[in-house]
Length: 112
Image (cartoon, rainbow, N blue to C red):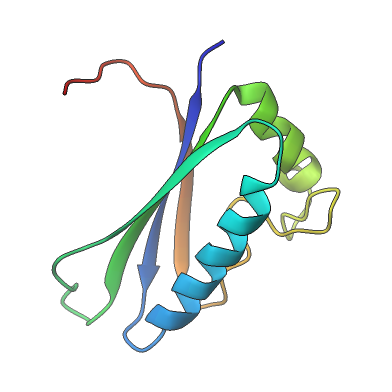
């Protein structure tokens, strides 16, 4: 079984950092209680954007794509991204004007 990494780029306007960090913390708490959750890592850019916004990267690793789909389930197919638990998934739980670009990836190569 191949793990899947869900990698979200999050662009947060100046002054909304604590809100974004709190929302991410709530997501990870929820995800960590689901079957197939492996780990999560949260990154913050060293430098701000020209408009003062800051970029974050959040990764969540799942044991398989099937485990990920079990958690996201109907979030793929409804406007607000709510899954069967009522949790907004696919980055839709972040308030505007925070921008989230979600993606799902598998590892092709890794070097240590």
